[in-house]
Length: 158
Image 1 (cartoon, helix red, strand yellow):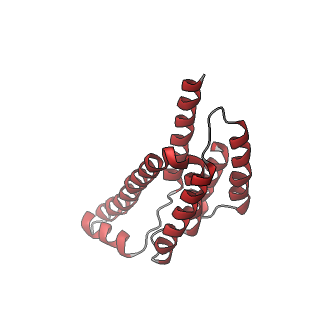
Image 2 (cartoon, helix red, strand yellow):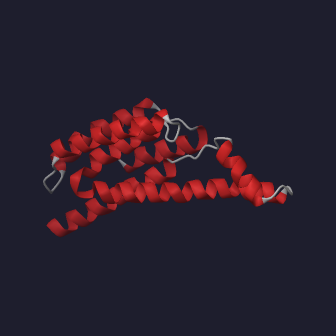
């Protein structure tokens, strides 16, 4: 799972796209995880969570605040996280995404400042010019949070 999310994030950061095979891979691995998990998995609730995230992501996509790729990846993270980890993983992903956006916009502000036009003007320019923020890195952190939580659950159940 983590390998596919890293591939998705790398492509998202470099090209702002994620190939369809990454989504299919994450979906196909989920039933395998359910069948082999040493702990009970509430997959019906996870499906509801995943669908809810996808539905809530659509307005963000429509407003241009989130790409469809990021919405689909977040939905799949919700599926893998399930009801027990969903809130924590979403908070981790959203907060790291906010930090990433701040760094991206600040970088533009610093660049403008070095050119003599000023940091504030550069920051305003970045916000107005629809500077793209590759949230793939934030999504990878969310996936890492899921894997670390699963590892703790497995260690506790042994």
